[in-house]
Length: 334
Picture 1 (tube, helix red, strand yellow):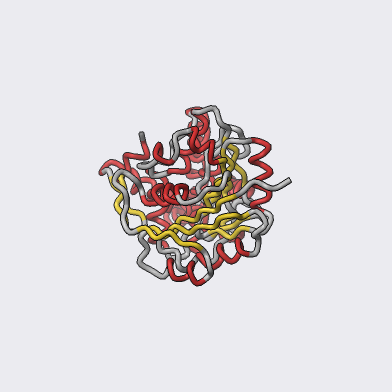
Picture 2 (spheres, rainbow, N blue to C red; picture 1 turned 90 degrees about the horizontal axis):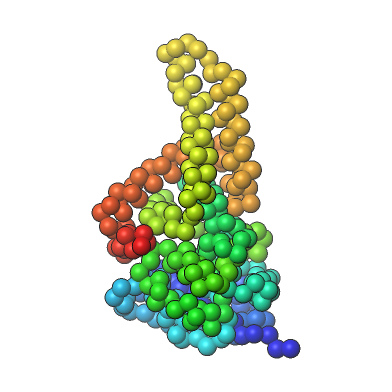
């Protein structure tokens, strides 16, 4: 029996450094791919040239439609310029294995609705590990594996007919987190959303360009990141995270105070800080190669809090910056 046709749509804005990896991986596995389209979202680097050199069809966008965020618009144009009955949205910084698409199709045929994957976070530099808390909270909030989970944008598969049934990408045109908004739209229309960890099937290196891009990215995500998280889940997450914050700095503060109080840190303080650190490692071990770098988790938490409050101030002002674009922060809160 002939397999269902799949269109792989890759939105790309200034992704020249990443495209070779994902396109090479996809070209090594053409069994399920009938259409492969890179949507060049007003790039100012060599995105177009690299994709073209690799023999991939490129749709070049030179303007941004009013009322749309850049990625939503790129995804929409990709949908309009493909015909396959199954659509796979894949980010340009991902590295899929040859097994990924086949596994996604099997999940889609079994469950229907929207299938999404949080890729394994493959990091190379120390500053990249400061994404630890963001990764963990995102995974907890997403309700992994549940039929009413929240979608992750780097890898999302769905039937074209289901996308049309929920109203298409027009319904999430102005959302900062178009993936979460699209997932909620599927659920609203009684279509399941199943979200999984990428494990060995797909990985990504989120922000290799530097800590500035890391900060911009998570500021954007946090501006609308609570969308779809239930009140009970949010309360439990807040309670656990409050304990993590307190425990992380219990031992460091004890060492700082030692010189003034002449009281050495207690066994309780050692156990509290180290114990929560081990718990954090246990929770996050399948999300990325954080490894020994988690000894810096008190500073990772401090960075998280700084970005959180920075995101709040940006949201109050109504704007965040992402890939040199000014976005409406309040759009993600509707």
